[in-house]
Length: 150
Picture (cartoon, one colour):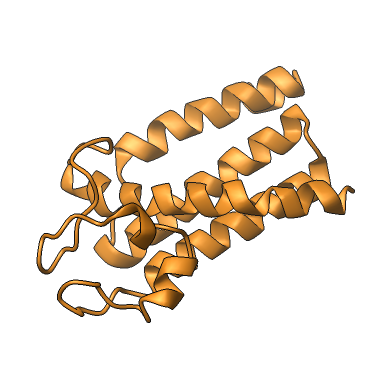
């Protein structure tokens, strides 16, 4: 176990959590994950870089849109924080190893699926099926056995 690596993993975990919020908001609506830039769902104003810093912006803006003051849901900081803590835990337990990368990927997918399920009550095949293939394939490569194929 390496606590220093786990702490270092928190920052990329927060950034990845911010992206997972985009995935949770756009994937069920079959919108592009890359474009357009993120915007307030109420007023449509694009979110600037300073308002898109994981956790910090939410606290600084007191959980509201800078332009229209519409409340921003608690899901956003919760997803960012959960992702950061889970990634830190995976790095702390498994280190920088294939098993650690697989555990981190699995956790990231579960956070995204949880956020989507809480809001939309669906688990999109566009996320679950490729993730299943990736996790089973990677696990088989890490620990070759018939058990993973079956």
